Image (tube, rainbow, N blue to C red; front, side, top):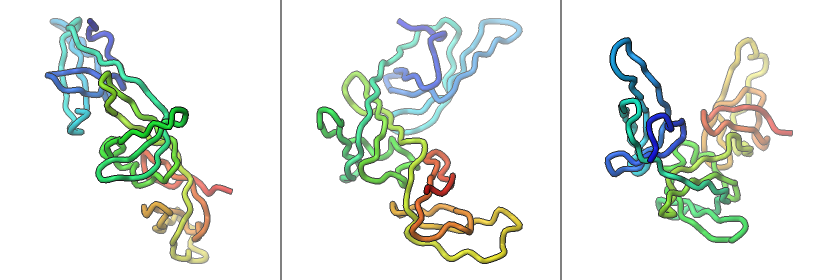
Length: 187
């Protein structure tokens, strides 16, 4: 069985019968007494974030997860249907696992999905950057370049992103899925 010294960012633990993912952790050594591990975690089922404290050397239950690259095919209800590119097996992945990045996903995008020991998806990670076509954008004002002026633009997935004034309808742009920000134009 694992101990608190085995905790790492991104690890999965079973705590109070629930599967949680370690978002961040700190090892605190007070002047007197034993060291403490403070773990910021996210419940895999509910998405609720919480803080857990462990004494140094305390036994914990680490859960092994398997990471697979899957191809996103389409949405169905509250799940995204993804396919394993080699076996063509289709797997429903809950939308909540993708968080806010879901608005930037288009069909045929490769995503990373982590599965627990029961073959259930517990975490999903979209690519860091996606390239999307701008479907609508107001024309920029000429001469307004004194500051980093931005305007809203709608991309092919329906998401609205703030872009520089020179970006026009029909251009392809790169977007950071983590922050939802414009990165650059793609040529």
